[in-house]
Length: 308
Length: 301
Image (cartoon, rainbow over all chains, first blue to last red; front, top):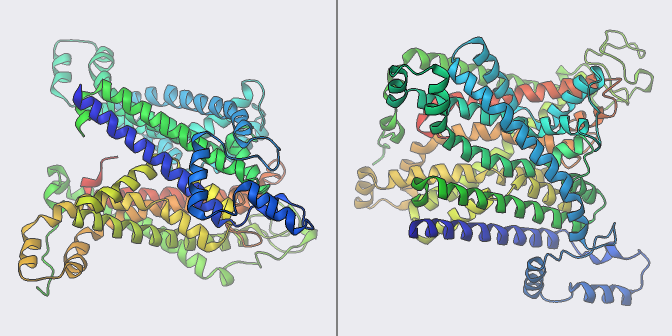
């Protein structure tokens, strides 16, 4: 138990340092982008007005003080007011979060549900046409740029075949293409890993023993091999969930999906920096929390990992 | 002392079947050569673009807007890949687009490998708290989606060539640093390094003449894998309007421009996209093959 506690403490420290680093980068970039005051005022505003807004935003104070104030605000989830929406940035961003979570979770579920069976079949039917086709496709899926994959899906499946809508958010048909696009990379990675992990296990002595006992092949694979191959698959799968949320910026833009990523891109165009900072921070936070949760589950599941 | 001692850490750790598999190695070598050939071809295309491209990539021809791939469009010219919404030749733009991809890609790899290798070697050689600080930062960077942060940074600072190269480059430094650190940790404790120390060799000299040559093959493998990543990241940023700005043709930018006309003029997006996909696939596979060939110990992921 002490080893586990130490492991979790180390991971928690790592997560906190990551959060701190993200906030610091956000702060530095914000300062590098120049004085925010002119953005908030009309071009012909009097000088006294500039001074008033600068005082209000705190940009007239020394840099270290600004940094400390900024960190204090971050702790409270306060990223200032959106210039475009005229509302607190955090409230705006939270409004867009559910769409992103929905897309991310669907993509994740789709990836796992397709990839694991494909990986198992590929491993069991090693070096057959099925295996080669699946793994070839997986290689393409792993190196294809997400946005181009989305474009290809739109062209072939919605414009030419007319099967699914091209963009927007509505019923479940709107969700299929974005989820497929977003999940493609994870799907490919999980399928390849499932295959190699299972092949590794199928070589073990206890699998030979199980076969020698006269068990049917599917029982050997399902009960004896797959369970042992599942641990590395679980790790990668968990990591993919976090990556999916980060990668959804591109997919949301391609499919006009009204989530955090699209909000971020729009806010960049609108020069609405409070929102940009808030979205970057919020996404990083979600990613960090998920990774920490995975570490937690993993530390409980596999005693060997605790001391790494 | 003049000659570096030919010790390779990786050779000892080679699995037996990799050493005996001469035929497999020969095949892998051929695949790597094919991949290198593809990149070379792309580079030649990029360098000779002004002569190779049939037309000026930014010359607009309103009479031949959205022409399908043809030998004789309304403006009396051949457009093998068709034309875009401004009547520009897609083939010429695709050829010129290779310039942006390769220049940004290679420059980003140079930035990333310099920073990553320097910090990785430093962490491995100095150990102690230097190592702790560098690796903590590396871990932290891995712990959040850097691409999103990159988009935020470029969005706020404004897109420019240097920003693009630095941000894409820095997004990959951790990979170099982590692997090189662990290799240097092993190398540092070896007798030949101790011997040079005892003979009075200065640390920078030991690193430059004895450590660096030993980790070079690893650096090349990671660099190749990172090149594929950098090219895709550049195209993604250009697609989002945060990369190389129009009218300079870039593959990502072209795919974005063609998106609105996907239904009526698919060729605007699909030709550059296919070349991008092919480049990404070939370069990343070459990285895998190169790893199998040079350094199978890296094969963890």
